[in-house]
Length: 341
Ligand SMILES: NC(=O)c1ccc[n+]([C@@H]2O[C@H](COP(=O)([O-])OP(=O)(O)OC[C@H]3O[C@@H](n4cnc5c(N)ncnc54)[C@H](O)[C@@H]3O)[C@@H](O)[C@H]2O)c1
Ligand SMILES: [Zn+2]
Image (tube, rainbow, N blue to C red):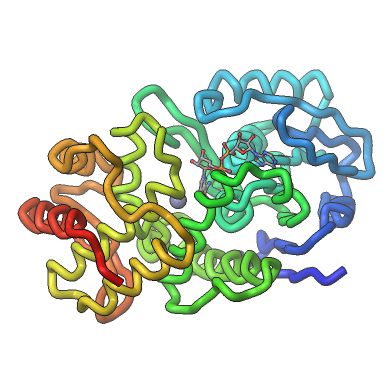
């Protein structure tokens, strides 16, 4: 069995991410030596069993973003109490990003912080959500508003899990994969899957090590995300996150070109990668209005006195503040013109 081990370097909180087929068998090696009990947090529709090697209780939570709430965290915590879990024990999140966000957040507050191991089972989970220690839940007022930075003690990306992942979820993950490609300017599409996932993990790990608490450089991970969040809200999540990120990056490319930061060839590269290579949507969802999307983007978390985007440019991808709405409108207009490869 060939697996790849990537390290997220954070001093004494550094941890390994192991990527490969069948790596779930390595779970007992990743849990803290002090652990006498484990609680696995997962969903019923995820058929991916893990053997922790110590007495384990499994807690199932609902499927869907509407279950990423504080009340579900309370429910999970009550299960921790019933299992008599202590902070010397371990929580295991087995699922997509929704699970690792909830399990991670519950672990971060259980006895003021209990170790968590993530076993992501979706592509988004493997290349993004399970890595980097952002955990949290939603409020009716917005996504991920309550949360904590809580790094896992280890992550197992077992590619066997992807065999049952619905096609559409896989495609959404390709949106985030394309993001990494555009961030570092490498072609990852031809790599074998283990290397592809491991490379994404490595890219994210490096960004997280340099700016764990999102004070600056980590913002590049939000490439394409300003418009993506607006699209998710405008379509009431009918367009998935990864699909929205794909459209968001096409928009970001046009906006960067409008601002003279990149040339047409670079815009073309975005279309080729996102539309042609990965078969993702490159136009605004039918029925969505640029005016409404603009309004929603003004409400973005990154908003500090002006429209803020993460944009490509001569120095690579970086945060650009105070973008004028006129330029945004022009970028939307350019998106409407069918792109001829
Ligand atoms: N913390 C972070 O840094 C971070 C980063 C990106 C995304 N996220 C969060 O992650 C969530 C999105 O993650 P996601 O796309 O994995 O969504 P998800 O966790 O909701 O999973 C999508 C669907 O796939 C199912 N599923 C997952 N793995 C499966 C498998 N192996 N077989 C069959 N079905 C499977 C799930 O049950 C669910 O129905 C969002 O809540 C987002 O906010 C967090
Ligand atoms: Zn994302």
